[in-house]
Length: 225
Image 1 (spheres, helix red, strand yellow):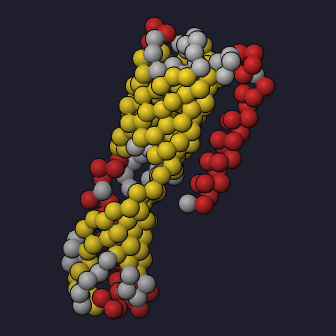
Image 2 (cartoon, one colour):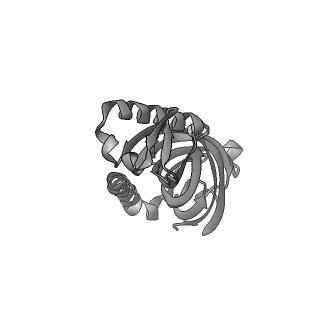
Image 3 (cartoon, one colour):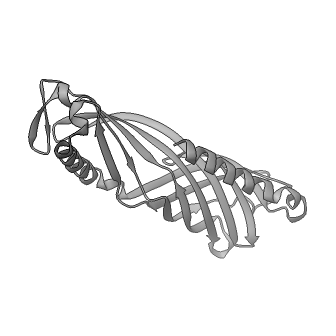
């Protein structure tokens, strides 16, 4: 996760620095804050043409919950971290827009088992809980994710300082890729690891709904004059 924080911070800082010398001349740059399903974030909007804008952002958030897969309870942390680079096409130069682009996707899920009992069932086989120990793992997604959506609001299209923007769309982030490991003595057993890999595939199947990540976000923008 640290590498994504460093990478996205560096890239977004670079994007922020690019328009500093031109904003006073072009009057087509705005910065905003937003909140929604991608997390909490900041966003930069630059006007390219009267009805075409470029947007770059940085979003992040963490959410904790639990789930059960194949009779094993897992506590999980959903770590959201993404950097979208988008093009907005404003139909007839209106507030309504069609948006497309790519997202540098650092979203991932950290898993930790919560085993209760003397035996734990993994890949339809019973193992002593004290020999398995704590099961931990991660679930990741495609690093580069296409985005398609619609929205309302043009941060640089109106002659006013502040504006509101709404985004509705989908990140096509692909199926989750899960990996698991066990902290107990069986963790180094090749046969047990095969069963643990099968458990990881079951988790991928149960979380396949995350292939398409819905985006609903509302933001407030400030235009530079």
